[in-house]
Image (cartoon, rainbow, N blue to C red; front, top):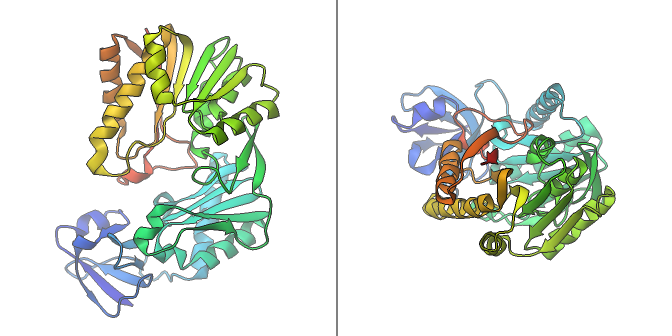
Length: 390
């Protein structure tokens, strides 16, 4: 097995559990290096650190799979890892719909698998993981006997690994338009064209968390996508819900979701630019009992972090101005580069500029089927904040 030796100052970080080895952290290699090959990683003084897959073309040159020098990386390795991840989800109560594999948090870096009842969506985001796609699919078939597996590898990050963007069913074709159940409600999921893997499972617990504050409320949901928060709000007793999203396709599906649950009389969804609307309506002195904001990630690179901070402050400032005194703001950020403390600082600055005082109701992360590993910032990405605006 090819050996990768790390530099002296870098090895402790990786040795303490982080699975990524960057190209500038490598002191040298011994043996042939083929993209996607399994390699042994050692510290500068020859101590074993881990076994992982290598891609010299990638900025993350090695991703570590195992810390056991005796463990063999083969088809059975992936079966055992996926089975172990499923045991964890079952143990904490996620069985019908869940993120089955959350990459590094399940010690399978660059692998995402979402479970939608009997259907699965798969993403292999690095070359070394893509090489094992056949073994991963076979493991899913052995453990679950699924009705369908859909590949959503239509993501630009694969190109950084020298991979093509592809999507489609793996194995027999099936209808990618499915219906799932969540918190007593039903939702349409488009596995083929929906964002990411087709549905945002990471907010399923947070959607349930709004139940108390929306009863008898006038609710505005900005960046509503397919209306899942808004439909939940109506289900929990909101008088009326208005959802806004720039995508005509998303809005059409939001309306279908409301109809699917018999809530179309209290839910309206409009295709509008939420950024512009929030600014205009705050100047028009419109007001709501509850304003919910769930915008897309504002940046995926550290170079644009200041732009993201400015964007989050602006939309939350506008959102607060639309909340009636004593009402509630529900706001989220899925930008992993904006860490929790920074997000709270942004909200505090927005409140200061809006001249509103906040009372925190809850502050939490993604649902527990997307586990957080301490020391791996990319596993702690979602911030969900609920505050009363005084």
